[in-house]
Amino acid sequence: MNATYLRIDLVRQLRDGMYISFVIALPVVMYLLFGTAFGASADVVGRGDTRLYVMSAMAAYGASVGATSIAASAAMELLQGWGRQLALTPLRPPGFVATKVVVALSVSAVGALAVMAVGAGTGARATSAWVWVATFLVTWLGSSLFALYGLVVAQLFHSESAIGVASASLVVWAFFGNLFVPLSGTVQQIARWTPMYGYAGLARWPQMEGRSVTGTHVDPLWSLVVNWVAWAAVFAVLATWATRRGRARQ
Amino acid sequence: MRVRWTRTPSWVKVGAVTTSPPALSLRGVRKVYPAASPVVAVDGIDLTVAAGEIVAVLGPNGAGKTTTLDMVLGLVAPTAGTVEVLGGAPETAARGGRVSAVLQSGGLLRDLTVGETVLAVAALHRAQHRVDVVMERAGIADLARRKVRACSGGEQQRLRFALALLPDPQVLVLDEPTAGMDVGARRSFWETMHEETREGRTVLFATHYLEEAQAFAPRTVLIDHGRILADGPTAELRSLVGDRTVLATVPGADDDLLARLRAVPGVREVHREGDRVTVNGTSSDEVARLVLTELGGHDLEIAAPTLESAFLALTGEGQSR
Image 1 (tube, each protein chain N blue to C red):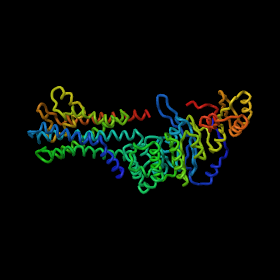
Image 2 (image 1 turned 180 degrees about the vertical axis):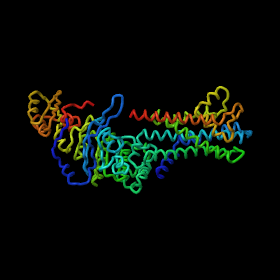
Image 3 (image 1 turned 180 degrees about the horizontal axis):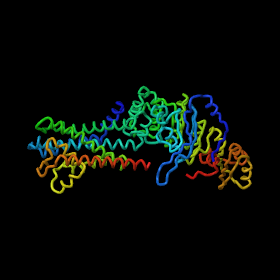
Image 4 (image 1 turned 60 degrees about the vertical axis):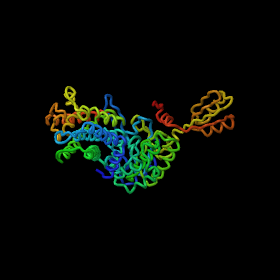
């Protein structure tokens, strides 16, 4: 990995307008809207309050959009010939991947931290400090699932719009992932099978331990882990298949 | 099918006195892309380029030029045969910056600035100290702060050229470097290139403009359907396909007049549409003199030979694409 190359690539992502609006501004604004609306009474929920609950949801949303958009843009770079340029330098493919992993982790960390900083500043409370740390770590590292998702979408769409499609479609998964509105009944039964459900449940685990905020159901830890692992496997297989298909077409 | 129009070209002797390995050596190289009906992009190419040579690879679209250059750069592995660059594997030479390239399209990140792009690639080559030099030489020093997406096609091509110069390569590969440029940008690009080759670099460039081969490359390799049709000094290619087209308006042109033109040695074909007369052949000077001084013609034009006429002369078949 090359420090100068990494810095230029990171700065390029951080000044991208879509990155700023989708990864930082949108989750922060949604936290301020939902967090204030639902959390006006600062009810105690699990190991925190309603604001913390909304905050970790929006942090998870921001982190996953960050991971998705970086992965999709990395795939687009290669599709559009930057990979050919890099092949004429000492940078090897593992070096490229390592650089992008660092960029994606940085961006998703910024997305999660932005929401959590605003949360801390507007009165989100947890019973202990480790809840904050654990929520951040799960949110941050768990978002790598959506890096795979970004790769799949980029390989399927083969154009610059792929990055927008990948990021915007996360709104749907976030809805089914229980991030925006507490789900119950049939919708919740369907939602359990969607890609963001496991990730969102795990990100909230430090606070909620699988209980729904409305008290309608409890998700066991193993079911959330299985959801995350299974979707990671599905996206990994799809990404490999789509990459092969794209290569054969050239 | 393969035409050699000179037995012992002068460049062979130049190559023979040096003991270092040739800059490029391709032996029996084939490239087949697997598909339902496999595509044979390169169908048996043998080519040796000595250090310091400037060689044009001339051919129509789909002739196998890009695939051949990609194999020289180690971007594509040959299906059969061997490719050596400076006596070693192409990938090794490319990673070490001993061979570099101006790639035909893509290859740039549109949301970086020109300066950032050069710096990023320079950092990978550990050649940051050359950033200012190559930007100056490629003529993009003034564009450092401009976004790549805001650059014209010619400016982007100059940027690719700057990237190619960064590792100070011994072998420079250019894949249709002036495609999509207007005439002015094309001329200015080649003027810049001339400067760079004075340092004894080996240059291999693909083009489908015969004029570019003539203006810049002492040696031309003519390629079509993945094979080398001809390989030799460009000047001899020019005389071999010396056909030029003379067009003129000759008032009252009749069959006798056409017969007089046909009688000029070197004339192959004469046509007439109304008063507009078209003469094809090698003796454009004589034809022009005759038309202007004795036949009372005016509005005379002489067109240079084209790639199509080169193929026609060498293969006796028209270019179908």
